Image (cartoon, rainbow, N blue to C red; front, top):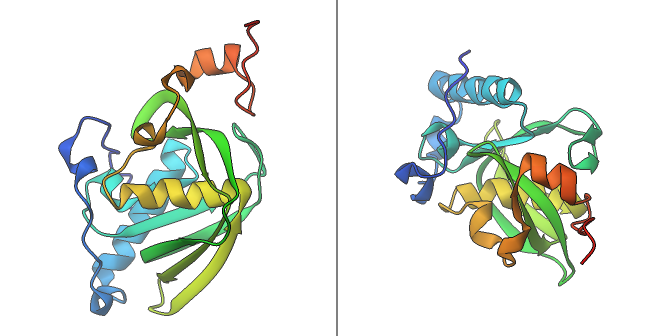
Length: 185
C-alpha cells in the first residue's frame, strides 16, 4: 500500500478523459494494489472521494468513503468505502441544489456548484458485478464531483458565479455552508 501524490489543477492529465478499465483486469493483483493505494491516498489527504486520474492513472475508477458524519461540508450520510468502475450517472429528477465544493486537486480553494440532487449510478464493482444505486442530496454531489474527474472536468469548470470561488480561509470567514454570504450586501 502506497500513498500516491495527488496531481493538481494545471497538470494536463487532469483534463484528459479517462479510458474504460478493462473488465478482465478487475480481479488482477495490479487492480487490487491500485485500489488499496487509492484508499490509502484518500485517507492520507483527508478526502471523501478520489478518482484514478487524480493520482495520474487514466482509468475510469473512483473510490468514495465518508467515515465521519460531521465533515467540513456539514453533517452528511456515512458511506462505507466502495469502488466504482466505469460508472455512469443518470439524473432521476430535475431538482438541483448547490454546495460549496473542495477538491484534493485544487487544494485550499472552495467553489459553489449546483448539481442534480437525485441520481442513479450504474457501475461495475470491485468484484466484477454490475451494480446500480441511487444517491440524494450531498452524496449525489460527491458522486458527480468524483465522476467529473473521469471526463477531465474539475468542479471549477462548473462554478457559474465566479464570486463564489474562494480560498478556504475566506470561505470560512465570509460564507456559511448554504452558500449565503455573511457579509452585508
